[in-house]
Image (cartoon, rainbow, N blue to C red; front, side, top):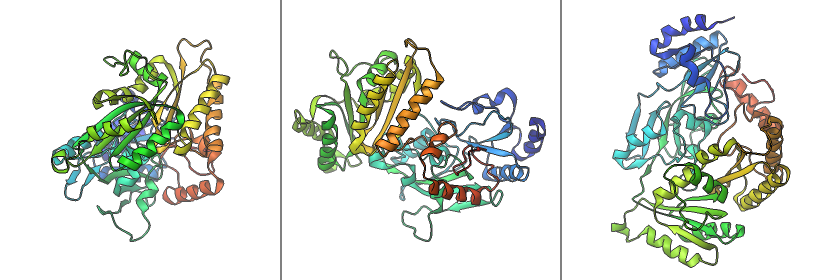
Length: 477
């Protein structure tokens, strides 16, 4: 039986004093951003790929389970250890030596531990950015492992669509370095192996480096918060935008009245953009972006958006607030903070075909109102890509005390509705982890689970890496 001391003594020469944490120093690595709390055997923080290889070889040889962890911003518990105190957390936070920008190729090769904010700071002098827009600051490796999307997915795609090459340290063969792909947009020299590691929550290998396609920073943007005339008008407005301004549409975000009010009431320096009128029952945040300058094209995006909205008044729009994009995006990004201030969030990160998203939101709200009337819905999401954060709050002042059994029943109801009634996904962006793996096993067809298990067996026959078994087995590492 391995102990913390014996494992630490073995790993210390591999990563040095700065690379090994024990005791109370591990606390932030053992607690997830929303779910997941456990006890690690120890935490290792390799500073380069050679140290990652050495750690992987030692742990694989001695059958010590590894939990890869980036910035630990995930929301399904996939980057935190369990309660067994038998797992080593392998943090990539010190893998930050390489950030090589190829401005002419519009690409960047970056170590897994560099965060999204740091990456964009490196890209800024070149007029470039990696336009994954989130309410968190994840690491590059974590974004690949979760296949991060965000609010501008409709224009730029998710991480999968912007990944040119990937470097990983394999579990089988133990510690072998695998470079997959090059900084090419066209390469059909065999299977695209790097995609086997995207969206797998860290299973199968340690992601150490990625080459990403990056984009020109917009020279113009225009923003509006509009009130649709009806639920049906939401998709009519989206279709009209894509028809008339599709080359510039970068965001189409839905915000419920409860979501806006939660943010307005609880986030300092945030005002109601519709004041003196109350926040509407539902609003849509529209953003247009252009990489081209007005000086050369003659195009003024704000004037263009204003003209479009004028044409849509009474057809699809009842009201609109136009202009201050920073203020409107601050409202959108403050919703989660406002929701947490109300009580305990019961978060649903789901997606359905976007043609059915308003129907789903209406049906899900009805279920909560009828069967869980003591709960409070705070929903918002990425209408244009079919994603919605259907957050339900167990308010601090609710008439019924918090009950985990009720939370479980609500999750079962909502996920069944998403998958069975609306042909959707129970995890649109957050991936699969210990928090939601039971729903993966419930709703993923057996042939798909067997294929996933076969891949896992090939890449990690001892199932040493990651916290989720994607196959038929119910046992997680």
